[in-house]
Structure formats: C-alpha cells, structure tokens
Image (cartoon, rainbow, N blue to C red; front, side, top):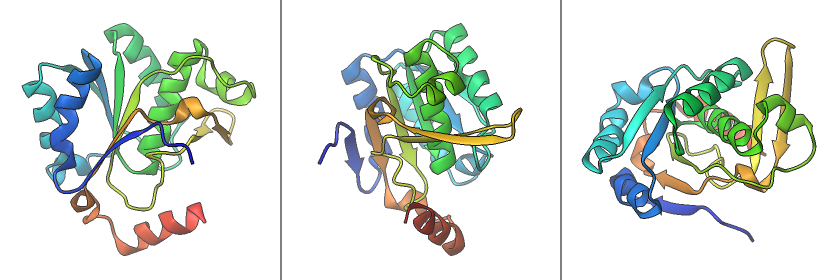
Length: 192
C-alpha cells in the first residue's frame, strides 16, 4: 500500500488549500479546470479565495473536455513555463486530473507530454500537483495513472508512473453532489 498523496477529506476540505500551499512554499499556481461547472456551483470562488487569502498567485487554464486533449496539455505546459508556475491545482473530475497530470509530467520530464508518456521510462523528477475532485468515482487523487488523447494523431494513450501521483488532494463529498447519477456510475464502471 503506497500513498504519498496528502489527503484532506471532509466537509469544506478546500479550506486547507491555502495552508497546504504555504507549508510547501508554493508561490504561483496553475488553476486548471473544465467547462465552468466549478464557477456555477461556487467551488471556483472557494478555491480562488484560498489562494488569494494566502498570498499565492495563480493563472488559469480552463476548457478541459472528456478524454483530455494533448493540445490543451501542451498549452498548459507553455503557460506554466511562461508564468513560472511552481504548482498545478486541478479542480474537476477525472479528465481534469489526467490533464493536470499530463502537464506536470512534461514539466518534470523536460520533454513533450506525448513523448514522456510513450517513452516507457518514468522521469526521475516530479512536478508538484494537486487535485480538488468533483466526482466520487475518479480515483485519480491517489493513482499513478494518466490518460491523454492525442487529438492530432487520433490516439489515446496512458502511462502509469509514480511521478503522476498528486502531492495533495482536497476531497469534500459536497463537491460531488452536482454530478449526475449516470456520470457517477460511468466513472465507477470505467475504473472497474
């Protein structure tokens, strides 16, 4: 049993984001999310308030779709380099988790995400990343798995590197309540 991820679980788990970021000394975060449901349900405001109140800068990259696309991952890598980001915080479900892991993988490996995923050799370094999950069935918060779709080549690949495991996970069951029964079941079956 191997769990290098520090998990904050329970009601209002996101209230620990600021203290956790400060403990590790992070200065600038990439806030990575999907289509905007986190803005409609109030989670975005809670997360950004934690960052602001803790004096941690952040840049945003939304737009993650199901079966996360390599093109967006590459955009995230470039944004992190340009903005000198030192931590990635994915807020969403399994696709956001995979996209965040793909960005972190490229930054750790010092190469393109697709090349790092298909190289078959785990990078020696780890780029710090964390997740705020909005679905109860992803399992991404502590897994070493990352699955990305190469939208140019029409291929979907995964890799299982321990470097893909998040450093931090913030899990509030209330954040999963807006997910449909169908999507929760689909997530559970996908992992079976």
